Image (tube, rainbow, N blue to C red):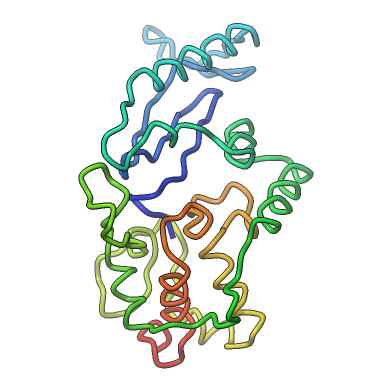
Length: 238
C-alpha cells in the first residue's frame, strides 16, 4: 500500500530520479546524475552511445541536486523540511536505487524488524468497515490538511481490494481474497499487521510506505486495515 500522503522519501542518487513524498504529494524530480555508465541518445544518428561519468562528478551532481531540493522546499503547516532527511533505510535504498545486493537487503530488513512494534494489548484486528474507510481515504499529511484529522491509507491507489470498487491502481499486487487465499492463521495475521506497519521489515526498499513507523496511521487504524484484509466477513475475502 503506497500513499499519496506518505512521509517516505527516496533519493535515487545515480542516473535517475529523486523522489520525495513531501507535503503529502509525491514529487518526481529528474536529475542529470549518471551512474558508472549512462545511456545517451545521439539525435543526429538516432543511436545510443555509452557515456562514462567520473565518480567525482557524479558526487558533485548529487550534492548539487540535494542542495537544490533543500533550498526549494519550505515548511508549510505540518509539511516540514525535516521530511527531506533520510534515515539509514532510506539512504541505503537510495544508494542502490531500490535494488540492493542481498547482504544489504538482509541488513535493511533486520534494521526494520527491530523497529517493528506490535500492539501491547496483543489484539491485531479492528473493524473491517473502518478499514475500508481508511483504504478509500487519501487525506492527510499535506500542508493544506488539518493535522488533527486522521490520515487515510489510500490503499486503492495501488491495490485492488474488493470487487465492488472499480477504481484502483496496480503499482502493488491485487489484495482481493487476501485472507481467503493465505488463511487466517496467527502467523499470517501477525505478518499482515507488521507489513502494514513497517513494510521494510519484510521487503527491503519496498514502494509501500511504513505506515506505522512513519506515523502515517495510528495503531488502531492499522488494526482496522488488517481486519479489512483478514476478517472472513470483509468484502476483500468474499
